[in-house]
Image (cartoon, rainbow, N blue to C red; front, side, top):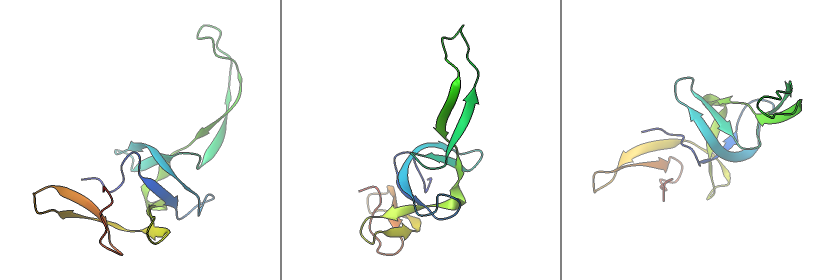
Length: 106
């Protein structure tokens, strides 16, 4: 089971965007990277391509961050928190915050 999934609320703990919060948009498992909404925004210069109907210019997009530079945001404590995995009584696996043993998934 993955500790960080698409749709999780995370906070950046290192880098130029330290302290910013956002939602995970995409997870790259093979490279251990994630894309977080409105975090690590870069400018990309794009040439126009009339065959595709694309206009040129400068586009802003989110670049991937390494998983080690983000942490789950715990709304109960309003801080970054570590996440563990435990097996529930019915046999399902669930993620929980290590600080207060509250379930992440609900």
